[in-house]
Amino acid sequence: MKKSIYLDHNSTTPLRPEVLEAAFPYLRELYGNASSIHEKGREAREAVEKARETVASFLGTKPNTILFTSGGTEANNFAIKGIGFRNKTKGNHIISTRIEHPCVLDTCKFMESQGFEVTLLPVDREGRISVEDLKHAITDRTILVSIMHANNEVGTIQPIAELAKVAKERGVYFHTDAVQSFGKIPVDVEDLGVDLLSVSAHKLYGPKGVGCLYVRKDVRILPHQHGGHHERGLRAGTENVAGIVGLGKAVSLARQEMEKRTQHLRALQEKFYEGILKRIDDVLLNGHPTERIPGTVNLGFKDVEGESMAINLDLKGICVSTGSACTAGSLEPSHVLVAMGVPQEYARGTVRFSLGHENTQEEMDYCLTEIPKIVKRLREMVTKPSH
Ligand SMILES: *Cc1c(COP(=O)(O)O)cnc(C)c1O
Image 1 (cartoon, rainbow, N blue to C red):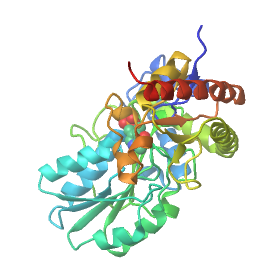
Image 2: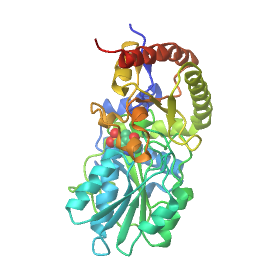
Image 3: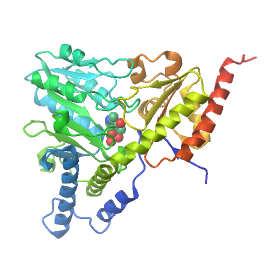
């Protein structure tokens, strides 16, 4: 079989064998509906509630603040629509940022079509939001601020605690999309001071199609799906028991291993970045040099096409993304790089290497032999006259 080196963990992660093992019985003999009163139902209910406790505990909160969803996209939709429509008599202004995941940006666009006003905050060259900018953006009509904890493309971490404090002082709800930070750096809802927070299982070695939304006690939110009493009447639908059990297992593994994973990732990425700089000229690291989640190395190679890079890397068995997975296929620089003001000649040649804890030094060494060859070849093609 062709060698495959997976460096696209910000798009999704491989399922951990322990997660599959924990979830599998709930697809087989433990098939009960968690709402049924009989034994089969009680087994499922117990498993769901145990997972809720695991997730809540790692987030530093109580189980009754966790609502299971079908993933990060639904959690973000739930938060923005649920708070927005619930509070529309109080105000119609929502603040977010120019670098959010498309599922936040598109939800904000939808809210505009429903009579809301949206302000998208800018970022600096390293992808950070300014606390001052947020202070100035809040008005008497503002009801919600939604700012991601860590960016999926460049990995920059926002000063959420400071930003949330500003919102709180003005009596405005604060939501954060923590899909990329949860499991990689400490995420505690009390330390961060947030009212709502989104999580997705498949970004931390859990299954796809499951996640959760944290909603602070006493924060009133509109139901997201109607039809039953599930998830405190806020998200109707028979629970994805196996998925939820998988999320719980993925979270407990992340909790046990976070420090070890971080050390390994930091060592891998530092050597990788240094190796690239040693072998290739005109490379730019996009994102914050230090305030960045472990594993994300977003590099702009001057005068090459990111797409060509990704295709050539794929031929060598190396899986990466250009910009973000959701905008792949379009040759425009991603909205994140544009917002950061990355020079065009670097932005076009951007490749996101997102490492995982199962990647090895040998794999990275192989990349360091292949990447310079590819860059050299692509650059020669650009500079060579066509006839
Ligand atoms: C992947 C991702 C999402 C979407 O999560 P899904 O579970 O895939 O719907 C949202 N926000 C960020 C930052 C992400 O990286």
